[in-house]
Image (cartoon, rainbow, N blue to C red; front, side):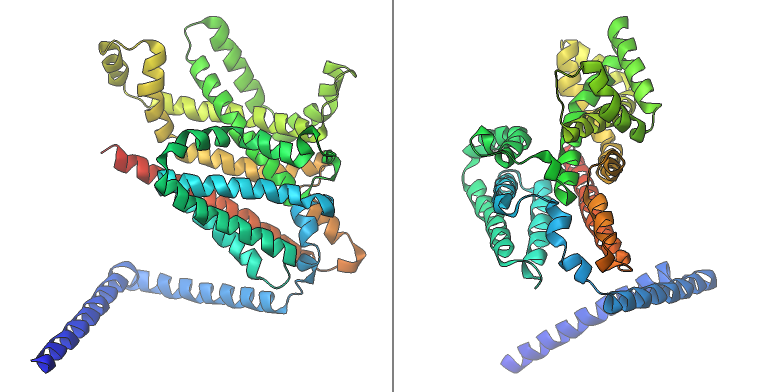
Length: 400
């Protein structure tokens, strides 16, 4: 009997393998070799892909990556004092805790971000050129994500505190870096590299969303003062390039406010990026509002909802869901456009790479630097895109 069972299980395994092989053959035939035209295109594409992979592999193997490994700290945090880098890691650990707890409390979309961040940290932790103290901080950050994921799954009462901390995460992180007035503040003149890129992009993305939302709703207002004020602002900002707004913030803003009030250069860049992004987000959201059928407004009014409740509970959720791809595209553009701060004297991620490439010691090795910069931008832009797709899928499933 046992031999019969073993024979049957062996036949089942073979049957499953043959079934998978047949499915693969059908997929290849239907998608790649359906007719002679598709077959030729498939062969050409395969040859081109193989050529590109071979060239990239040769470049990666033959390149001298010491320009990246030797200047990794400079690329990531600029000239931030070595003895004060623990402040940055404290902020990173706080963000890791929030991602882990949010993953445990709400699952789904936030889990994609938490896992991706832990994988990125793990890669930097295992590469040999990372400093020992950095490996320790990375290990603590990864452990914090998964520890608070487990805590979040058990304690649903943490939802309100976690939401409050998310709202305050930017001022808290900046406060940690500056010492909350207790420790000696670290001048923003030494902020640079990936740190500066992420700070400017995060502030611009978070702050521009509510401003853009108010502008979009205000543009549809029946009050002429509110409506035309929003229209004028949106059209003026969208009619100017971002680099011009940056120059206005750096050069003309001090002239308007006078010499009594001093505004930090990085703060000016944050304000410029926020105001620029808000105007484009307003138009994206307005497009979502216009896509809502008139029947939704009439149904909300029939239920006795006033304009405020109708907009908050009925219209805006549907409008924002419809424009998630456009909004995330704008957020990705803001992350990449932070490289423009180099023209106003700030050393962001790309600006710091240019400074390293200008060092006579690394002449001729700029390609390795730019490949590393491009890879980092790609990882975070792809992560944002992936999260937007997961969010769309989650909202679509929840609305059924």
